[in-house]
Image (cartoon, rainbow, N blue to C red; front, side, top):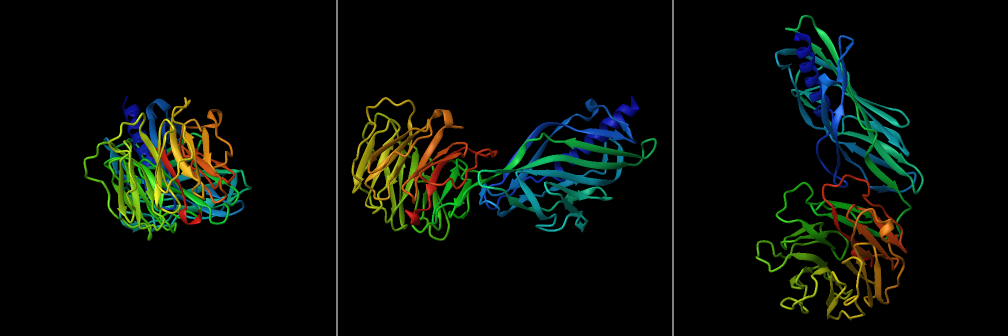
Length: 473
């Protein structure tokens, strides 16, 4: 009985170390970090060479946090960052003394690409209680091992970011990073009958923790952003990342995004009318945050000058800021279905509103080219975007259906059999095509290159909108 209790305590200590000592827990640069949590990981251990029953070790959750591009061009090198963290290496557990730890390591594998170079000291040296300790990484063609040989005494362990360069393959391929194994060894002291070594190995499920799609280069001046309900932003092509609200606590979820006229920035709007501005050319001109609204805000559109924007509410109410002029609204009118999308004319002197049943309302110099009002739809309309001339528009439904009006050409639709998640938005392209985004971040392109998506990533919140870089259209 005494040995069983001793084993149980040792294993618990080691699993804690393996779960939090070397695996990153936060941060985001390029695009929001993708966190993957493996629940119920079964570790295996020995004590002085004798196997320990798995039932004594138990299971733990292990989280891996990555920052990597969602898409790259063929043959290019890109950076993957495995975020570091701070953890406590215990000196004792349930009366057992741990003198030191050795052989702390994580092993990773990349499929569909090759490792080129890497560093275990990206954002500062590894430290134990403030004292630098030595860590290293070893690279093979498709494997990487990050290790700290030790001995390391118990205390506060600060691990650095691990950065590694990966070379992409051909267009159409996918580079996936896998976390394979975590290992460590605790050295035991008194009051156990004899000092002992307790190594622990934790094999992780063989699933990707990060995905990068290798895609043909976007057309010149082509790019777009995807935004999630938490305000996390993903940028593709020429679209630059200027910041996000990912990781912040929002009063209400983000529902839309609009590009600055120059493309150097963007605005988010939340359902309570709060506006968030990012980038040098997306200035804050006001919001409805803190105002009691009759209905939630559902969309935002920028003016042609980039010095203002409109907000649209689900009852058709319009709120204008900066140099955005008010050209009318449906506020106060009984609608058959709520407004779900908005688009401004190229001149900035008008706008359209679309309702979930496909109804279209035009204001200012926005001309009416037709609608789906009165048509029986399989699924509701979720998005609206215009042609570059402003003489037509497309509507997208949640099942991927596309409906074209005016000079908007029908170039294809997703269709329910090709959807991986419901469609949520549509945007126009410099090639006079369109792209449709799903709530899982998958992007379907028509008469336009696919510049990338976040499909397959573990998103903190569903995608709610897609927006083109405005200076290009």
